[in-house]
Image (tube, rainbow, N blue to C red; front, side, top):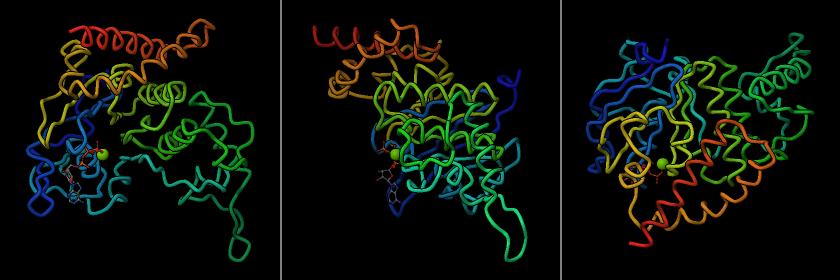
Length: 297
Ligand SMILES: Nc1ncnc2c1ncn2[C@@H]1O[C@H](COP(=O)(O)OP(=O)(O)OP(=O)(O)O)[C@@H](O)[C@H]1O
Ligand SMILES: [Mg+2]
């Protein structure tokens, strides 16, 4: 089983300085195929710096980076992409007024004809975009519809489907669920599970321990540029995870999200929930009792 195989990507003792600021201080971690690794940590912990290093946006100051066992030095995001490492940033780089299929093929447009007659192959693009989205379990009736008409969660899913189609082996997601409500976050979490089922390695950055617990196989926790290490679900209870990630203030902030649990519960009653939704609901439920017990103390 590939889950137990060699890492697809691994970093050892990565350090990153910005001038005199040390953003990463000796971070090591690895990701395997068919595994979701959640990268957790407070604001400024170094999460974005780490994934930007993996994605070829930054170069580490010290330390080693391996892809499928080979040491690599990426000079640009293109280098990382050529090694099958695709990153979906929160601001997504999509063009709202352009169609779903245009956005799907942005930067790698299929063409037909030649010379002056060379043009975007709309039929091919529409067919592939629709089929690839269907594989992720999302039904796009009209791929020529502007991407701007999709929900935030659906737009994330276009970006994920695109990365999978173009042969990504590793998918890096920087806070894809941050701006989403419970239902849409559930949609994105389902695609993360889909990407894992298709044997990609996924690095999922989130501030939300419940989202992490719903889909994560492993958890790497960063704090001020250092790592506490990588834990499996068995090794790290939800409560420990929350405690490592945040203080009591943030637990309070979570209460807003927990209220939305009611909504998820309703869907549950309607029998419309997938395995991931159940995991998310269970996670939120446990978080709620954790929150209540903190308040009582
Ligand atoms: N380009 C940069 N120049 C200077 N300092 C930077 C740069 N990028 C990040 N930093 C610093 O590095 C540290 C880690 O930042 P980073 O963005 O990686 O944190 P993060 O964990 O992604 O936080 P958040 O959860 O807020 O997104 C911070 O102290 C930040 O100010
Ligand atoms: Mg960040």
